[in-house]
Amino acid sequence: MKSKELCIFLEHLRSARNLSQEAFTDQVVSLRQYRRYLSGESEIPFQVIQLLSEKIGVKTDNLLREFENAKIAETEIVLQLFNSAVNYAHDEFIKLSKENPLKQIIDKTNQLMYQHSIILDELYSRKIDKVEAGKRNAELINYPKILDSQIITSIEMLILSSLMDFFDESHHRAIVEKAQNFINDSSLVISGGSEKIFVFIVSKIAKFYGIHEDYDNVISICEIGIQKNFKLRSFYLMEYFFYYQALSYFKKENYDAYEKVLVQCFNVLHYEGNLKKIEKFKSLIEEDFNIDFVEFTANHYSTKTKKFQASNEE
Image (cartoon, rainbow, N blue to C red; front, side, top):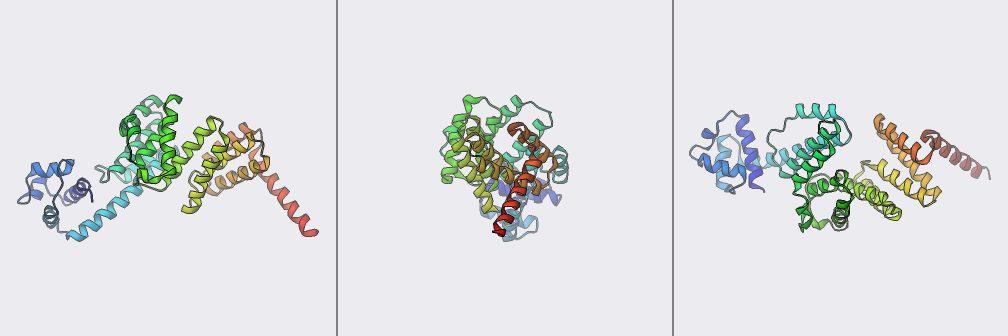
């Protein structure tokens, strides 16, 4: 259990009960020492946890249970904010922020994700430019020094992989190598956060190989993301994996595979029903392949139906 995180949770409960810090710590610990616990300068002893729990009328075992529940709820809110930011849903981001004000975040990894989400939302709503967004994200994880760390958290890896969107290509290779080590050996990364973070990082690696026209790596890396989503029963970023694969198969002149995965991309998009995303991919695909996406998919299923009918007639 992390001492600082638990102290922040206790501070939430103290504030909710309208107790001053002076009254809360009276005859338990000095106010100065309590603030050291809050800042993480000192580890809080279990005996002090028990005494402070009594001050707010909560049994220690219930406090610890609620602490874990609060961290889970906090993680869910932060992930919702992140998803709103990456999907360019600024209004939804603001609405979620107002409904769930995160004045003092309990979990350190959630704090990182929250700050990263704010930066992305400000970028996509044009409050800051890419240079500023890159600088602030780099500061969050102490880049480039983080590249020398033997073990990092999954949230740090997420932010690190996002730097490829902000920095020039001279930075990309080292970031991809670090990210690929992560997907090949997850023991190098301290977990914390959603399994979807793994999928997000895989998508960044796939995009990198696509830019460098390494189509075999794109296909295999995307397959890792697709299989991970199947395991999670999730559609997170599936449209990108199928789109990247379709581009790669097309470049390799494997047209049967290209058609199959492009139709899967269409199916995922329409299953999710995000109209903005559908229009975005429709434009991308029409530009990349010089086809009408809807007509292409309709023709695919029409051909399949005719083949099926013909085989039944034989």
